[in-house]
Length: 323
Ligand code: TRP
Image 1 (tube, rainbow, N blue to C red):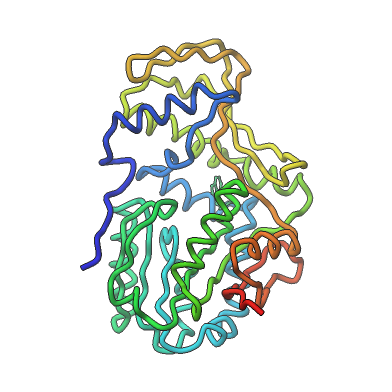
Image 2: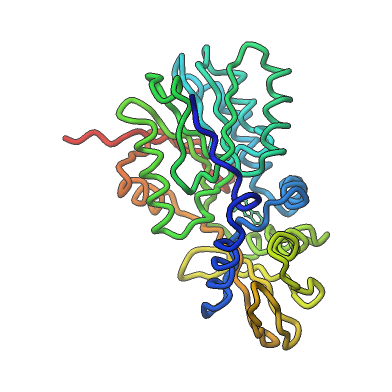
């Protein structure tokens, strides 16, 4: 039987989590893991971000899926076992499932248990013949695949949303390598990759007029307060989304509005007025840059689908054949 790892961080040892958060807060600049975005409210806010007018990513990716899902499904072929990393509501997956020829199974992998089970339940009603095997796991850590999926001939990892961009290059490469291992020699990876564009468009996408992304960013503090008994004052931080050219990424920060002391795990953390806490990276790639990155993980780009304005790409990767 498949082992379903427990959700992190909700039920992991909170001492270890406290040490982890403290370590981030002692760095310079200070950091807080984006894992803390995703409690129930965070997952809801994230879904709201995806519908914001400024946030072109979801809309554009869906547009590409609608336009090309049949071709994508044909490239994946019949009998594919589809494994989705960070499945959320599985909304984009539906477009693929509608076209896949007799998929063997769908394995949504997500860290937010309630959200995952809800989504799997809804999907099961709409796809009664599809075998759905949800796995509650942090996909950045090794996890076991259900046994019957682990032996399927055509294993396909689906990783939409440009989530790869939320990892620094070292971790992005190791995640791609892990996908390469999961799919083996005859599988494939179908991945959504956001492309470089006007920094003003990017900064607006991550700092919307309605303030939803700001609320999402601040919610990480609320989550730490509740889960680890910290006392972050949410009113004492501003949301910041800024383009960092030499890293080709948007960075999300929380900026302290005043000198303050936060208490966590028996320690006092001093945060100066104007000091930044870094919470998220959103890397943006050129086609060439991404092909190079994938190449270093043993994956070759086979096909690229884009919207007419070339804002976003969905790429089919296959294990590199050694000549
Ligand atoms: N991967 C998507 C992106 O980079 C979604 C996402 C991840 C996101 N973390 C985020 C969106 C933080 C807004 C804020 O855009």
